[in-house]
Length: 64
Image 1 (cartoon, rainbow, N blue to C red):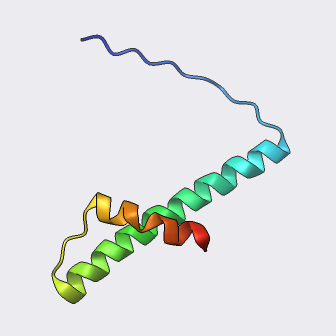
Image 2: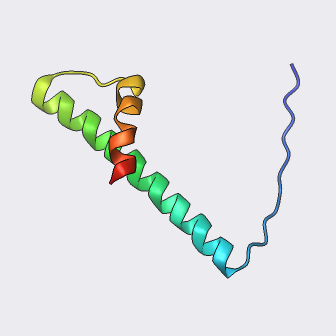
């Protein structure tokens, strides 16, 4: 099996750069919230949260 990789260099303007930064910030917030949710559920209830359980909770976060 051959794996190929392509790399693209981006030259965004200021508006695009701000949107990319905001997307990265939102991704980091969501990732950290998911980790905290799993950590809390394990400490409080000794329950493991699966990816699909967290995926079903995303619509709540999207509304906020």
